[in-house]
Amino acid sequence: MPALLHHPGPPLAAFVDCLWAWDCYTAPAPRERALPSGTVDIVVNLRDDGLRVFDRDDRASRLPGIMVSGAHAGYFVIDTAPCASVMGVHFRPGGAAPFLGVSAGALTGGHFALAELWGASATQLRERLLAAKSSADRFHLLERALLARLARPPRRHPAVAYALRAFDDPDLGSVAEVLARTGVSAKRLLALFRDEVGLAPKAFWRVRRLQAALRRLDGDDLVRGADLAAELGYCDQSHFDREFRQLTGLSPRAYRAQGVERPNHVPLRG
Image (cartoon, rainbow, N blue to C red; front, side):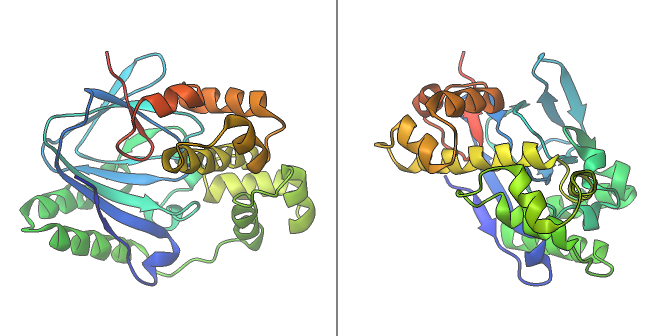
């Protein structure tokens, strides 16, 4: 069963890509590898008051049933459960900081109880979501909670706004090109970008190219690795294969063989 998606209107639309929900979803494996998207997410477990994530050394962290996941430059592993009911907020790149009360850089590569940032209101929000009668009601509650945190719509720094657009351009050749066009120093752009987005510009660009590759691999059975590497601006296929493996832990061929059901979630069978 596909996820339920809700795309909010303005002013949230400038910061939030979508609200999502899975109701009684059973994953094909007890754990999944969550692939990096370069964005921040809020996740709410509507079944159990707990969430568990693992780092690459298989060390587990247990969090309350409502948490925030910072921007990641590589994959991490999550527990799945039979008939899971979860929902969340998928922010746009650079969109989360105005709602969380801290810079995106303070969350980079980590997972945190939302109560650490929102206090008791995070726990109260989860309780209201549990009591809601429908997914539509839950989406409405989430929207209201986000609007309440957005006291005044902030303005993204123009250099960051430009860089975010540039890093999704398949014709971009280097980070240096972005620096030249923004007119700010490398040190200044690095600080601004980490503060608003949560990753360094080069790491973010790598993740966004990965995301473009995943969309092509998920949607075209006939795509060839060499053609995809050229299309996305990699030096050659070996460069593409190497970066893909570093970010996902899999080769492109192995990724496709997994039969991914959910975007950015690869089942860990066996």
